[in-house]
Image (cartoon, rainbow, N blue to C red; front, side):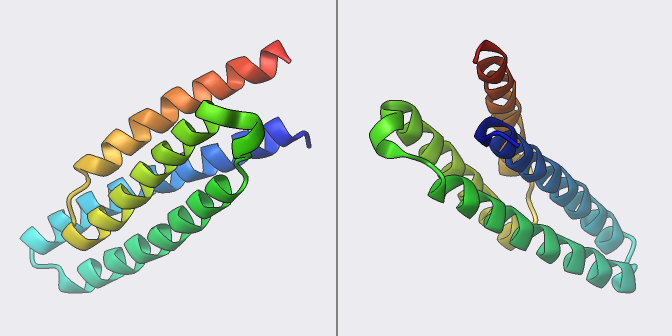
Length: 121
């Protein structure tokens, strides 16, 4: 695969894991309200799994940036990835997925821009 395809795959994987984490946080809230504590624990385990996947993926994206060649774009992408990292950790800690939803939306825009760049190459 080309470097563009690899980054696109990693971005899509991050977006998918953020989406799954959002769903699990919602499920955990519902299980907590209905006092289904076995399901709460299962849901928390899934949230933990997606946390690790998200953080690993974000780390891969951040370390792949070339600040010398990429300049301001690389810096902006790093800041976006850092925003996503903070939102993932915060959502894990607080069981509130509002920041995750913002991260998901921002990644959607980046993925669309990335696909446009790939087509132009």
